[in-house]
Amino acid sequence: MKVRTRFAPSPTGYLHVGGARTALFCYLFTRRMGGEFILRVEDTDRERSTQESTDAILNGMAWLGLTPDEGPYFQSERTDHYKAAVQQLLDRGLAYRCYCSPEELESMRELQMARGVKPRYDGRYRDFHGEPPAGVDPVIRFRNPQSGAVAWDDAVKGPVEVANEELDDLVIARSDGSPTYNLTVVVDDIQMGITHVIRGDDHVSNTPRQINIYRALEAQVPVFAHLPMILGDDGARLSKRHGAISVMQYRDNGYLPDALLNYLVRLGWSHGDQEVFSREEMVSMFRLEDVNRAPSSFNTEKLNWINHHYIQNQPAEEVAQELDWHLQHMYGDLTNGPPPVTVVRLLRERAETLQEMAGQADFLYREFEQYEEKAAGKQLKPAAREPLQRLREQLETLEDWEPESLQQTIQGVVDALGVGFGKVGQPLRVSLTGRGWGPGNDQVMAALGRDVTLGRLDRALAFIEARPD
Image 1 (tube, rainbow, N blue to C red):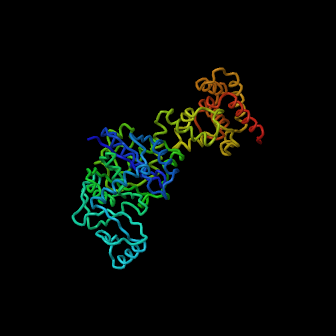
Image 2 (cartoon, rainbow, N blue to C red):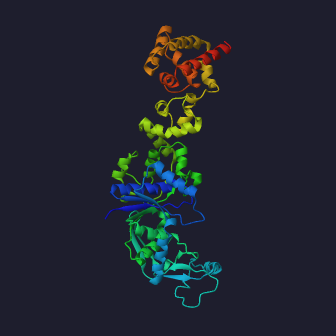
Image 3 (tube, helix red, strand yellow):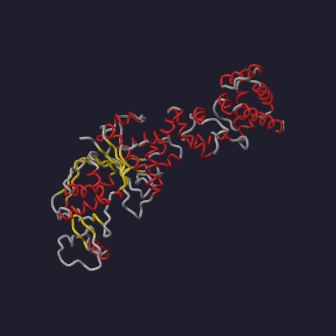
């Protein structure tokens, strides 16, 4: 039997980290088992589903590199399949029409709550054979078994059992004929040959209802694996105040897709003490039985640590592909500055995020407005005039504008003046970047080019001349 999993988001919001982790676990399990990974968009909620959310989900999946083998399928295009399943259940007496008005249902609910009973549909139309009430468009309810229990061996949670008497006759088609969630997912999973349903444990309450529908449709019940929820640092369910934002917002905030996936895979799964995994390692090591049953806590500091690791260790060309968006967003046209890969090589040691790296690159793409006050006060003093002037003269006639030659030129001025390297290097850094820290001066000058370098030295010399002795 070929393993087939599905990730089935509803386009009523963005793809958040919980959904992304579910998609990742489905993807890894399928790849390890040599199976097929299906993407299905569950857009039957017409009022809440939006094209914007659909696009955000598809863009998030593409950015993360979780490419499906099939799909995306859209439930809104499969209505005929659901209607046929409803009719099949009606024909076999496994579903029935319910004529309860909204007012009846509310009254039913209030009476049950007043009695201290769990609110639920009381089955009053389950065996109805009389004249239907006038002016009421019925819903279709599934005739749930009234005895026995639904049991399954969850691949994460272990054995689970729910008594059928705890389940009421759920609506499988609304009064306008549109199908409901619990029916559509079962029909889709049957027709798409899904063997393993991997999803968040907020769906556990749906599972016994769906298993009964599988059996009513005489279909094989898949293996279920319910993933524990993700909590914030305070132990509460992850929400926007904890940073539970769109996956694409993590892109905008400067995280690498591989870093985010690496962080997500460790939320509820582990392989010994290993923290950093390549995609190939994730696929080869991932097992559902290793998923923890307890909830996981989202930790932004840990995510930043992993992101910094990837920024430092991924090939510069790959990091640059992601950095390019941030640089363009921040500076617009990049033709007057170095290529993004150069920026990565210059600034990767200090930056935790690509957004931070792009901000640190400002001196490479535009003239800084002023020097850092403390750095200029300490380094651009009259004593720096001669070293900077000599260096400018040497650089103006330098033919080979490469880091090695530039470094040799700086060293030549240091040797000629008989001073420590810092007496030349530190004023030069402030002259080039406007601040007292940064990458090597030779690398910076190579990235800036001759004209910009000489212009900034002229600016620094003018600054020194203008300040009081």
